[in-house]
Amino acid sequence: PPKPLHPNNDGGVFPSFRYNNNRNFWLEYSTPPSTTFPEYDEYYELRSTTPDPRPFFLNGDLTNNSVVEIPLGGTVFLDCQVAQFTSEFEVSWFRRENSNLHVLTIGHDTFSADDRYSLSFEKPLNWRLKIRPTLPRDNGTYVCQVSRHPPIILFTHVKIIVPRVHLVDEDRQEISEKHYKPGSTIELHCRVENFLPQFQDVIWRHQGEVITQGSDRGGISIKTKENNDTLSSHLYLATADAQDSGVYSCSVANLATAQLSLHILNGEEPAAIQSSRSVSIHHSMFQSPSTSIWNPGRLLALPLILSEIHPLVPLKTMPRMTDVACSLILSLQVHRFLLVIR
Image (cartoon, rainbow, N blue to C red; front, side, top):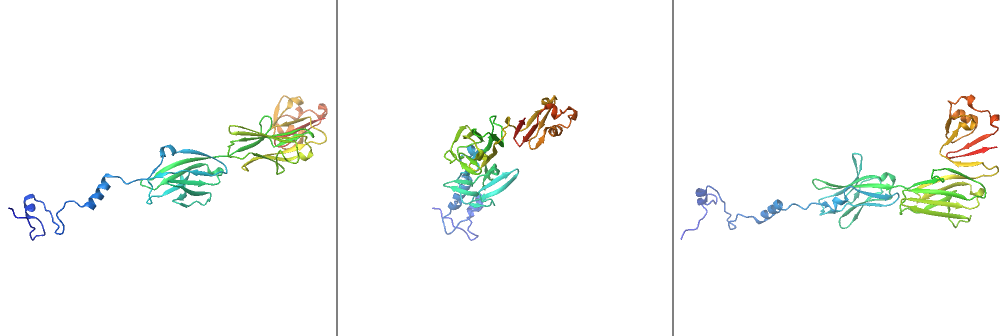
């Protein structure tokens, strides 16, 4: 039988392999000959055939660039659900302003000087950004980033819904003043645009005191109607008297307010009470075909008004007060004027 091969004295190289195959194979004396190294080969196979688990956004295709509408003064949670997240990665929130990114949170820590921002983690994988309370300046784009290589980002666009409150007349034109005769019924109309169910009902006030249908004054009725995102509230006060004069306001959840001054007329009553944002005075009333626009705000006699509003009108075209046989006085404020003829 053939004799077993033994390593010679030149370092454990089998002579037959060296000379016959031109290759050197070394033999470990402590273990049987082997061409595999289990620990190394297992790691190599894992690295070469199976990619590392990498975090990704859950439902990222559906939530990226989403728009979130939030009422003013409310609380908003911006979702960032990260699957396959491990401790070697970090989740950060930024706010984008033009081309700049402002750091809000990194991991569980807050880095914004505005304490309205914080991280509110929701198990098992939602890295939510919390903003409370919301302000108009919170409109904009927010970025959630996971620090893998390359980083992945998720955009969320926030729109803050701000109610717009107006006190209007019968033509839905905004007014800031109203006049009533003693004994008449006062009607004030408050119109709220961008109204959301999350907002509280309209609150009426007189001189800062809340008005309800059960107030001591009596004769109070409040009618409210909602149509899509617009709410209308009507305040009725029966049998007006001097005590009803003053400042009235309507507000929505203390977020937006409109107010006007209400006057109860005493003594001589006006021949006409009108509301207007600007008053158009036709010179044809005074035998002139031209027209000028009067910007409210002063108490002046008519000849001064005409010469001031339309300096191009020659003074000789202005009638003498004796020819008109009347005295015309305009009492003009921001949105109203009284016309008294006698």
